[in-house]
Length: 484
Image (tube, rainbow, N blue to C red; front, side):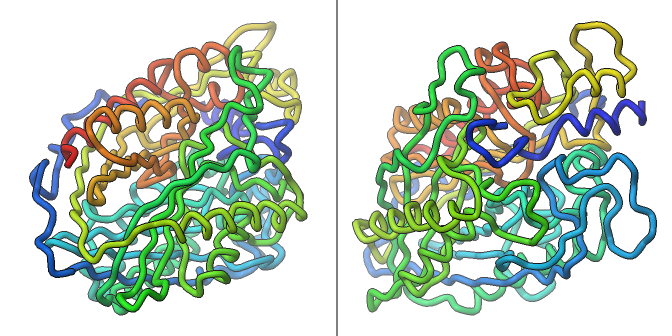
């Protein structure tokens, strides 16, 4: 089993097989989950006039030294482990330096007696255990943050820190073996951003606006899917604008679907990749911290790749965020509410089938022989709870008449569109989907795409109906908040 697992992990990177858009890339019986929680009555009235909205934003650079493994590409993984102990790496290449800062950003909103904290971090993913550790560390420093009122989401850079989890599958497939000191530095950086944001709380105004951007992304399942074309994307770009009462920018929270894989596996320097370039562009334009939340980006690749794309796409997406931000109408009060529920998805399995990758970056014949497989056919590797999580937190956050659905993984764009449509039918104004939030269940496809195969289908660990279950869990959280 261990041998099978170790080589099966080579089959799967955390999020893609390469940077180029043309080649996109046994749990026990389910226990009774804790009850869902909702922090305000479903149809609570908005706060009375009088402007009680307060907000604060903070930024912290993660204290990660050169030499730690970079997470995200199996192309950086060796077949023979490094055991010399000179760097905190074993399977993955050690980082050679810092190309650009890897950071955590936090935004705190408080109004009507409710508080919500948003944390974005430059990493390939976030796990529920890391969220718990961030909350605990921040509270040690005097923070008021609690698990039910925090949304932590990863930028999904493939050049960020590894060695931050002890879950065996992710250690082998994407992040390298856990190094507690690296994990602790990661957690401390996120907690520092939260504490900084709380220290900067001031009277504020906020408002949400949306736009459309069609030229920055492409669907990487085109050619694998029976229906998707390169133009099959979700072009929606949403921006939460937060200002001080005098009108000066306090923070920006952007939501868009794009894999930050401009830099490929050949890059060995720590980097926030494309999201870093976008955020820096927004921060330069506004003079205030900017957070970036991925949407349903499971099948969405950048339209360009390489070093140059950091400049061109960073400018294109960043400038559009600034433009949309300028159109947002802000108010000095906002009805806030949060709803959470844990959902156990049961046993996880990695299904190795001949159509298991959407690119030629891995020799499937070699993989089969390493697994001891002969002939053709589908092989299945069970992923127990020591390898991947199987219970995940689903969350909805109400911002006035608008709402955010935070989902713990990488759904393909059609699943995001289904959640948005259901939220609109419930009566919400604008519905945002934050992917890679509060946990990581890997990729999630719908039934049609699961049957079509390809990389994202192989990386959907909980079966063909995973997409339906994800949408159902998300819509249940939206329903718990009501609409207006």
